[in-house]
Image (tube, rainbow, N blue to C red; front, side):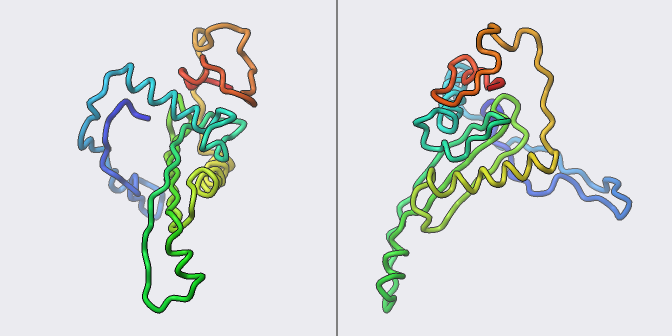
Length: 179
């Protein structure tokens, strides 16, 4: 989402006083950089957009109509047992964990969402819809600030207004531009 920069995780951007004035701001800290070419990063970004926006994408349950979301589904094996547990609990403990990580908008990331559901089974079917609810709440709060579309952003007018209801249009997937 950010060109291969591994940033230190932060939950708080700044401390504010009772008047809403910034007392202390926490600046981003880069911890490492991904060893990938710009072309490789572009391919990865396109794949992440397709995961959510392609009709066969594993994360299509997180797709939004108003903002292009990029994401990755995941499932982690959970082979646990608990002595003396009843049959239902033993079955639940063996269900895989579900993951879904997303960012939006794909071409100008302003939010990152990671959902982990312990023993939640598949990431695409169970974790992605949770991410969608979070992204929809973010949109309702008015926290999305779209960047203006420059005249050269769309390769041609033929694709303007395409709703990507089926397979995602390749030009918009690679650019992360408007649907």
